[in-house]
Length: 160
Image 1: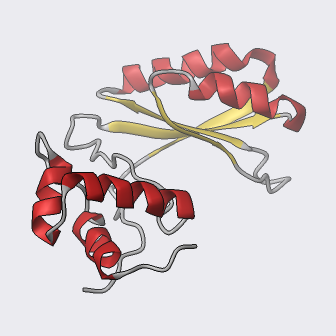
Image 2: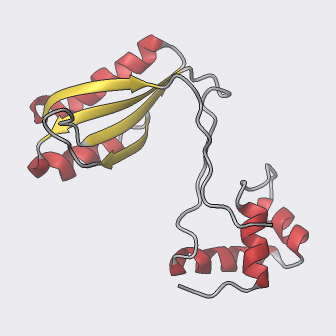
């Protein structure tokens, strides 16, 4: 991993709570820390490639966007079917997260997780039905765990 210099640390601090909502967010960040937008992008690329930061992505507040029915679907899919099943589910445009997790039999046989969102229960249920259709007989059982509240969504933060 790359050693962080003062500019890297300033860049991480300036972006760790999110990029500014602006037509040119990298220019705004650059102005804040006193470098060019090009250097912001170069440094972020280097930090990602070196592993100093793991990823950059959108963290939406689904409730604020009107999605009140947010469900983590969990599926019991045989290990030998997991790669193809996971790829197919992840390609569905309404699935925001899809990943493989360990099972804990006999109480928890589920190993394929996929998050769905709906403005109403019928929409969320139709998404679950579509995943079930895609998985077909590869799914031995499933559950839907609907969110009841918003949890804090932040990663590790550098101290000021």
